[in-house]
Length: 264
Image 1 (tube, rainbow, N blue to C red):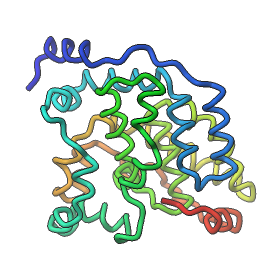
Image 2 (image 1 turned 60 degrees about the vertical axis):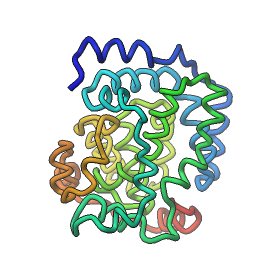
Image 3 (image 1 turned 90 degrees about the vertical axis):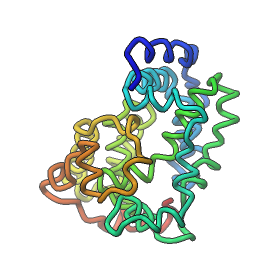
């Protein structure tokens, strides 16, 4: 267990300098992503260019959290992507486990994985361009690895409805400007049922707000646990609690969006 004084000292050593927003580049990339949603490179560019000081605040919170402080003190530091990429080990974990749910979510070797997200993110180049230090780069890489895990923890599927839900959920978790700027775009996806769709996205946002920080979760320790137990450890409300009216049907417009976008 790391004492508070040790955690503060560690945070002082690892905290990056001020990170500013690149408004022009970020907004340009966000527009490109909205017009071509299958281009993940634009989504990551918009996210990190516009995140700015929010990333630093999230990193600071992570460094003060007992789980985060312990991870930052490890040498060598763990690699979540390495664990998630070891499908043989994950497949050997018990039936009904978090790991099994993750493999089922991926849907097989042909589906997108954490490796795909990391390649699209281009984090090493962004670290140099935006002035991240090694500690922040490690933290951002871990968060980029966590997108699929957010789906599983929160309970949202990988279809277009689930993707919109998990983005709203993530916005509730982390006040990232790009996610909030995407809200009007997602609201426009289902104009035939504006009340139902708006209620769904707001409930997903509140679901994220009601869940303890998923950035500070020791996923490696939870993968072998039954999924329900892992969710209890994290403290995430159930999907039924978050959406007592259920998940809305896609409708013709979302079906068309899903056909035209390769969701990963």
